[in-house]
Length: 346
Length: 260
Image 1: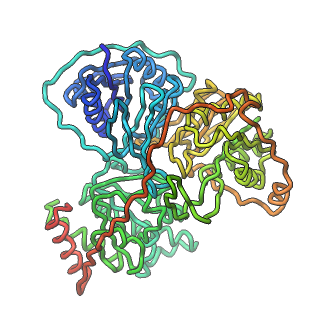
Image 2: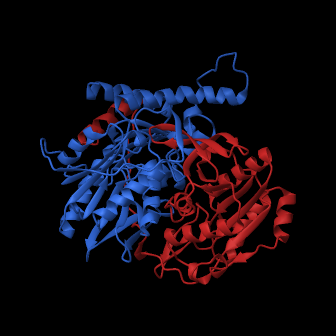
Image 3: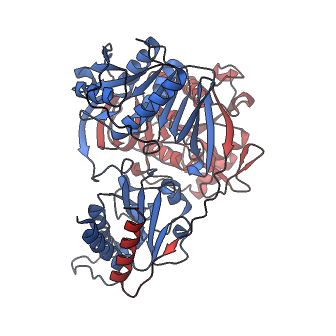
């Protein structure tokens, strides 16, 4: 069956990522505007269960390649299958969520199809049979509209949480089509190392972040055995981040950090939010001891509500925050954790 | 090891940007080497220092982009090549990847290509994967560490930063590796390096020199550039006599306003 739009369902360990359903929901809208159906492309091993979810989230057809050779995501094999699927269905557009995997997958598939890729889409409209997409550039300081008029399919990756997740319709079904398996991959996945974080930053509805201020608690005395000044500072920062984490637990939030905190060695880079870290768009962003440099703002400015807790009343973070407390995060954050615990019953 | 580091010239990330006559303007802010690419250059230099060989920095851009290449030379790259043609102005990633892949092929016998994970201006993050695809080489993106490199056996093992954790991947060479900032700490150019770079003659390869159409046609167009309107947010400062009082007030406001 030829579907006008393909949605790529990104998955890991046999589960689809949340933003894949956002992509499928938008693919449905594009397909309706173009007068056609939506095919969900699912690649991996042991991923057949995702097909049912894809139907329930709006796919008319599922294009499935489930094979041992696809167990570990490898871009070269995955791109070949995705490009082949697009050719077979003469798709007008391929819509993917944005993740570490899909960005390169979209890029390589576009080379195979000699077409354009628009990554990190935050809005779009369908005009004259083409998707005109809006994406941030220069760290979100500017936006550009981008359109691919000279080739098909257009390939777009949607930024996480920029679009709503469609409500699944229980029991909805469709056509299941099996795709040809992949050629041999040149690369080999040796192992996975677990991430340090809990909740994925880009998918999180709430983020609590710590900045340089986490280490700035003069009331703490490091243990006597830590004599090195830098190590004392890191010890202080760890106590500060423990408070940030406690608040994150109560809010079921992911833990973020500013570049200053990462560069000072307080927390691994995987937590960094900002122009040179992760770009996030949560409902709520709590900035603890973060001044809010322009590069940090580039990564979190689109949060719906920003709450700032900082010692410096002049900090730029208050220019974008909805609520602010000028005070010592080491006192305010634990008090807020306690107050919210009581009120939210967690 | 015959290594290429891809660099781009971008406005400084601290620049104030405006839209002037439908184009991006960064005023008098300096143009710099794309910050992500410094990590690529550093990793190329580290690889050379460990295994011997040569590092060539390449850049696609106008004449003034030679300054980014000079930065790479000052850091310690052996050679630099500017890929430049009037026809390349404003092209999309499909054309850029074609031109860079062609330049890498023209240099010849390359074992490894390093690039930064994305450019801080266009922010597409597509270049490494697309160059790899054009060359038919593996793409190793979001690399946070090189775990092992065996030049004789022609393999590399890297740790990739995915959202769920680190994926350890072994790949044959040649390969294209795009790096994140965790991989190293880029060195500052040395005084001697800056002197050497300032005297360097940087060859310019035109589209025809790398076998490309002088007016390569991209597929993307950009109908509108938007400077997002400044949203005036009135920050509500929560005050009180004690941290507990402030926290209680803030918690109540957050619940009243349905923020939580």
